[in-house]
Length: 327
Image 1 (cartoon, rainbow, N blue to C red):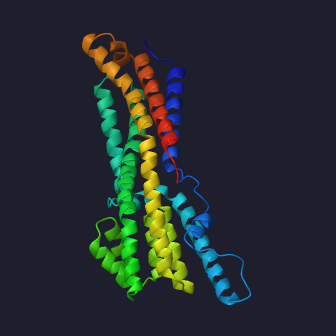
Image 2 (image 1 turned 90 degrees about the vertical axis):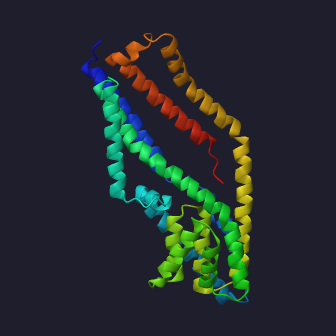
Image 3 (image 1 turned 120 degrees about the vertical axis):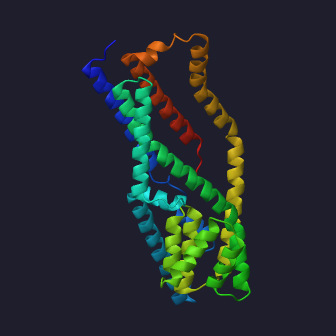
């Protein structure tokens, strides 16, 4: 059965819509999190109304806090404008944007060639090539970022405790960071060493920590940057605030573990439901080899396979998004 031009156009528009939707899901910013003011209150960076005594010091602290928050907001906006570059930087894979684009092109060519070898429709092959060529490399980067950030969150509380002990022993912050970097694994070690290297080429501690917050897409890393920025600008009890931040990270990790346990059944169900069509196709192909041949040998069958595959992928993305919980 031949596919009419209007049908081919509809199929192309369907796949283009799915492709743009996937890119939009991948490229959106982090979901809105709790207000920074609430986090800063928990960390002991906020206080009540300014009293008559010590007005100058209190005003300086508040001005430093406002300035740090504005800088953080500007940083988040810049990340939203260059999501792919930020993802490459945060993944730690050492891949440039040009290399990433080249990998996407290679993946698209391979998918297109395999689709043609499987005698799939030309339009379907082209749509699959664009879809998988753009999505798979980004998926690999996101997996690398998630793996790296899990290690970072696991190590950050202990590293902050070591920094606090060094500060209370009278060591400067830079020496505390060097000591912590020598005792911990990657990625925390490499990030702290990068802070030290940035300061070695002339950056201030505030600028070096700001770069650190840009490389590490975690709210806790940004709060760490704010703490250091305020301390560098107006002084304060850095050890107490870092202790509060370390405790906050521990509590957050415990809550994440509870959420993961509570959603494990839903994740398993999603994998089972998603694998059923593939298993059924495999079973039918084994026990009745020619039964599904029209789906693979005809243009209209290819259209059906492509549309169903696109909707399955979209459904899996929706289910995955529903199971995510922002803390």
